[in-house]
Length: 162
Image 1 (spheres, helix red, strand yellow):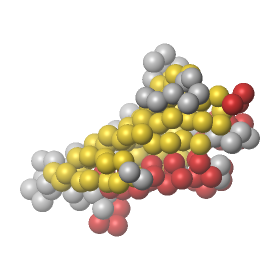
Image 2 (tube, rainbow, N blue to C red):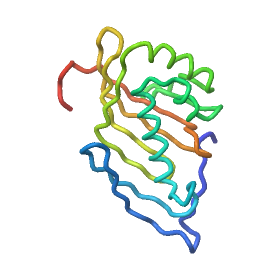
Image 3 (cartoon, helix red, strand yellow):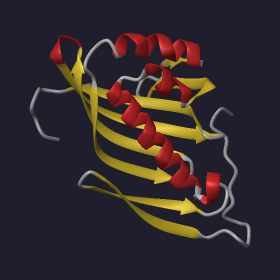
Image 4 (tube, rainbow, N blue to C red):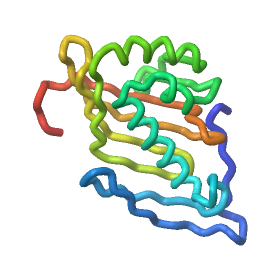
């Protein structure tokens, strides 16, 4: 499985940890298991840090550094139809070359996370034809890279609130 993960919850040294994160004025609640993240971070702390970096680089439209965060075999799909949009870093890069030609910007509205999975609720602006979209993005992190992304999109009437 592309998104396989191991559980540390049964080991005697691990414990669940509720962690609060702030992204601008947004409060985020996450559940984590201590121990297997990088640099002493929990799985969820490491995953959230990676997804925060991904969001920052997306908004900067920094294609090379954005792609550095992806696993070579990253799998990207549509969350409703199940259509596979990309099965490799090269496939994904071609999509974002085009996307980053527009002034896209993702605004994070909310976040859920559990272990190495992060789900973001976003509003995307700067799409072609001055478009906007509501988006729910699910990211699965493996070996400090984004291994899987699943998106649900809805066109949005410009300027409307959730």
